[in-house]
Image: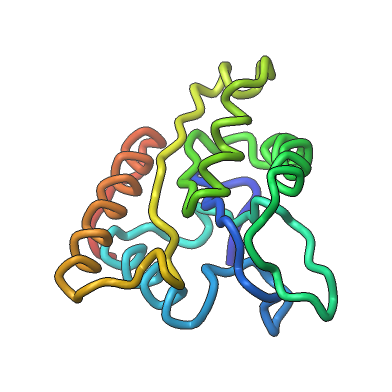
Length: 165
């Protein structure tokens, strides 16, 4: 569904609480995944144009993935840089949640030429699950609209048209 060759936007998640039953990166739970998929559908953001990645891209079997420590966030930097080399057309990262934003800022502070050659832009976004998305329906709608603006801008930077498919 996702394409290394066509990826333009990296969706960086802070933490998914536990490993996906299918063993893949996801937005955190079924409700969060539904929110993200709905947003992507409304924008016309095709799966091959984006690639999910986790701040701390490892799961420890039998252990819940709680709040990440600063050391775990820092440990995710080197794998993120290696991953970005595999998606050469990616020009934006939408970082969902505190830890993802922290890692994205660490990335921008490196002197890695890959970042500057691409003009990589980072968009700070709210996590899609848990307490970060607890609020009234109106507030949740506002948060989704704000997130949609970030994704729409990332799409425009990559030369992708927004709009329903």
